[in-house]
Image 1: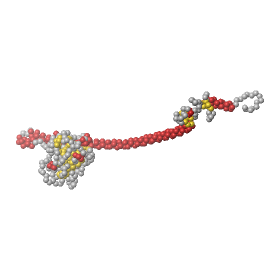
Image 2 (image 1 turned 135 degrees about the vertical axis):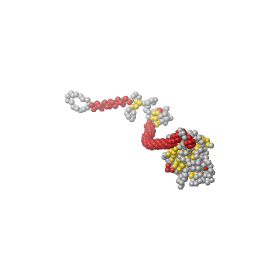
Image 3 (image 1 turned 30 degrees about the horizontal axis):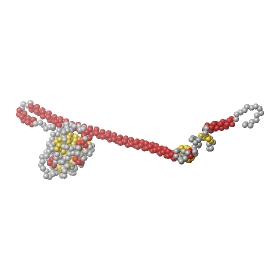
Image 4 (image 1 turned 90 degrees about the vertical axis):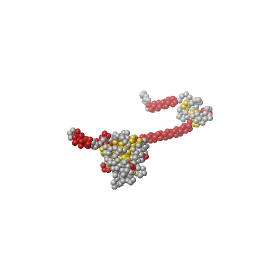
Length: 436
């Protein structure tokens, strides 16, 4: 009631406040009634009604741990009489404790996995840094390798050019010598032509004997120029070494000044006087500081190595059996295939015409390889595994002997010996050979 005084007929108004309160309680009543159905009972706690549960139409107040199910008090007197039952609140408390423990374990698992995620991310970062370092290092290595290859290529080209120059120099020498011989032969031809057309019989008879003899010239049929561009032999050094043979020096061929090793005759050096008790053997070199190997080779391949450390003069190679033993040998002697070191004049080879060699390193150990059938004699710097020089297209018709020339020793200079290395020092298998 609003308690207002009215003295006449008035228009009634709606109490909106009271209306709102009444509507609120109506809604509350309808909501509570919607929770209850026939068979519900009042709740002592919330003042609402709850459904009774079959089969006994009682409230579920207990929990059977044996069957893991909810029961009422009547169930404990019948089907669940011998089972372990506890109040729902107690079971819920225990379940909450288990759930809390499980939650803690799950949380621990989450933490472990989050930590693992961080470890993996850290590992990826570490590997990325390691990969970047590896790439940088490899780039440095490959850059150095490229520089080395470029340097080797430049050196290789330089060696080829030097060999070509040596071949051209050799060719020029041969051409010059041929021109000189052609001049001599043309002069002789002119003299012979004049003599053929002379009518002076006495002059013809007096002049013909010396003119009938050919002037002294070289045998040019086997002479040729080789450019020495076959550097593939360098890579075949190891394969050539399998033909290593044992070489023993022949004292019967040694120049009288030469001193051979007493134990095994594997080394030779030059003394300052004739050695005692020497035989006058026709095989002995009379005017050259030379000595041959005892065994000759008439076929197949053979290889041997010689130590030249400490030497300032030396000749090494192979010689034919018929090489001149009486006269002094020179750089263009027939039947001799050698490389040499001639003091300040440097290295060279006697390929019919002296060839100067430009070596990058001073050889300490020289390897000599011969292929009789191919007509090849090759020389190698064993330590540097590099090619020194090769003779190709040689026409071998007689036995070949390893050739050694330690040259003259003067005031202690060049006194070191030429030493033939034993085959076992190269750890190589001896090949089959034809020795006569």
